[in-house]
Length: 182
Image 1 (cartoon, rainbow, N blue to C red):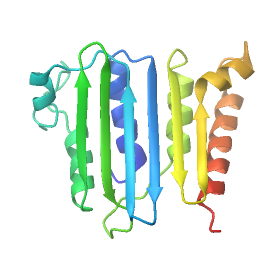
Image 2 (image 1 turned 180 degrees about the vertical axis):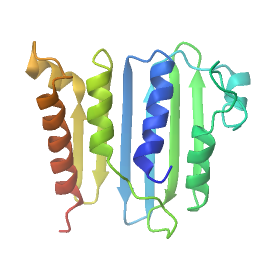
Image 3 (image 1 turned 90 degrees about the horizontal axis):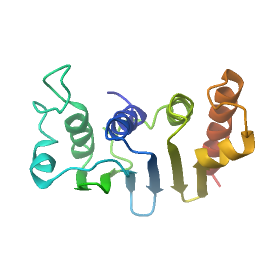
């Protein structure tokens, strides 16, 4: 994976497979401390201690369709090559949290990528899941909640192509605003 948004997408898909109905994604860009922190938390089925120990092994997966699960190990590698780390915490029947911390200005840090596209895709293809996305920079914070969008739309489905386009543009415009130089 060449972009952080694709790693985030992979973790979101793990959360969906774990039957989560709420997924929180937070991104914090801290220029003062030169840190980028990405945290994805769900309320899915969670993992016991044994599974939690195995989950970062690239040759382990709970899926039956293939025998490897590279997503978490690739995300860990992306963090470590930028002087960072990936940690996972989980509790059965409560949920899982994946936190990545890395040096923001490291030359090998992958670009954020199309986070607006990832979010609008996930919301439109998973209308029963509540997504909460927060993105903090030194210029401000942006908060997106799919629950709020669904309330405003009332009977219009979030999968409507016009709504998907609107969500993507709205998210991107807000991210551009908080990433603009002061």
